[in-house]
Length: 267
Image (cartoon, rainbow, N blue to C red):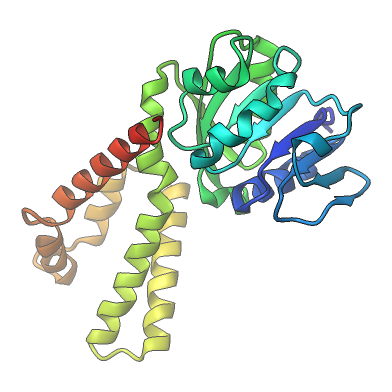
């Protein structure tokens, strides 16, 4: 069994924060304090929930402060946690918020790792890309890697600006896949398939294709070609989806738009 995770302060107990906490508990979490004004204060064997930074127990010494609040709330929230700079590493999963911008709110001594996970973290199937800022030590990076790996695969980049397109691709990617399932069910119903069966077909097809992609060593284009018989029905459908300016162009434009929005959130 691996060593227990050291104490963690979780700022923001929403869907992603809750998923990460569940993953940490599975890995053996020593103790945690979660801050969320929407939740009633509570205490337990390994978790204490408080309403704000002032209510964090004075004797609580986290090794990591995980920032899981909405990026729009960063200016109002982060300065209250500046007292942990120099003692803990800050692990941010806020979209768009740069390391430099967060250091301005937390103090120049703050060691910050910026990361972008995605919602499959809820079933420990997430993908997270992380970037370590100035002053992050090797042990702090290792700790952040452990915290992120509790909910899926972790990749690291040296260039922070790559996190903007990462946010657009993998951060928002599950929504694009869910839209595909939604539209596939709608199209099936338009062809006369009963709605309940249409939804089942769409769900199982998207989920099954994703599982096959995950299990296969082949590239996506090879898997696509394997399904596409010459002069068959799939080839006819793909001719529509891949015609200009259809799916390929629209997806490129969508990712570019999301990347631009991620940069805007930096302020």
